[in-house]
Amino acid sequence: MLPIVKGILEGERRSLAKAISIIDNDERDSHRIIGEIFSKTGNAKIVGFTGSGGAGKSSLIGKLVPNFQALGYRVAVIAVDPTSPITGGAILGDRVRMQNAIDDNKVFMRSIASRGALGGVSKSLRNVIRILDAAGYDLVLVESVGAGQLEVEISKIVNLTAVVFTPNTGDNIQAVKAGLTEIGDLYIINKADIEGAMALFNSVLDLIGETERKPVVLKVSAKTGKGIRELATAIDKILRARTSNYKEKERKMLELELKDMVLNRIVQRAISMLNENDKYFLFVDELASKKIDPYQAAEKLAAVILK
Ligand SMILES: Nc1nc2c(ncn2[C@@H]2O[C@H](COP(=O)(O)OP(=O)(O)OP(=O)(O)O)[C@@H](O)[C@H]2O)c(=O)[nH]1
Ligand SMILES: [Mg+2]
Image 1 (cartoon, rainbow, N blue to C red):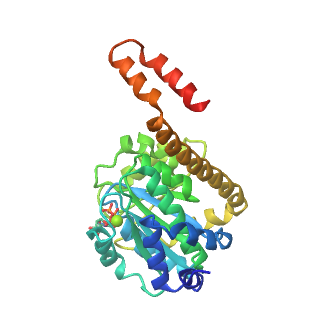
Image 2: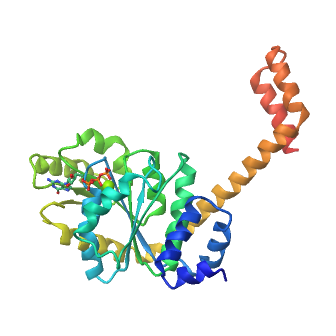
Image 3: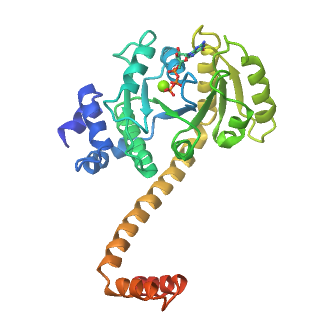
């Protein structure tokens, strides 16, 4: 067993931090580490928090953590930051924001970078969660910004997606409609203490309430703390109600992951096969001199490679 793996299994923070860096930077040892801890994973429940920048995700998480701890969870937080590297300012700001509420020795917090590629984030996130899971954290909260493809990817990894809306960041019903209706299991209207929260709450209820999944919609304020305990209870309740689905969901996730990884290897292999095949450049020549059209060229070349 690698010494770092021993540290992970003992929940030793320095080993955890180091292992997460190794995973996130896709260093050589990452495969061995995952290989050695994999059989000890599968216990953690994962909740994603998504929503526009400034919606209050970090503030909410900060207030939720002690409530989850009171419910008996060992909590870890991962901020997926697609723009800034690990040393960037975002997580520092978040730390300050979360600080009041969080006892640093009981919660593990970390941000992961993504280096642009979507696949990179998913891979990093899955494996970082495995590290935390093996270390005994049984509730992992994942913060990510936005409503794009990244959130859809993340929603495949987490057990529950909470979408955070707020009246003052231009969130309106259009934003709700734009994709987020599909990924949310829980909709949180944050900043209930400011103007417009009730109207937004009602609009979201109208829109979401009609969908088949009937997700929960809650109004809270991370600032005043109103509704936070109820929110923690609601999340806990959904997680418990779904326990029977976990094995099934985990299986699906593993299937997707395996497919991704195999396809990746095949693509890499195919690219080198193409580059090494003389016919490739012959076809390019023929294309350039208009002797063949792209469809025919692709068809013939693929047949040569796949032969
Ligand atoms: N009035 C009010 N302000 C809040 C509330 N929750 C958060 N804020 C403020 O909103 C701002 C953004 O909060 P964050 O928690 O950083 O929001 P975020 O969604 O994590 O932001 P990003 O990580 O940048 O996407 C901060 O200034 C908070 O103090 C709330 O319930 N009411
Ligand atoms: Mg934040």
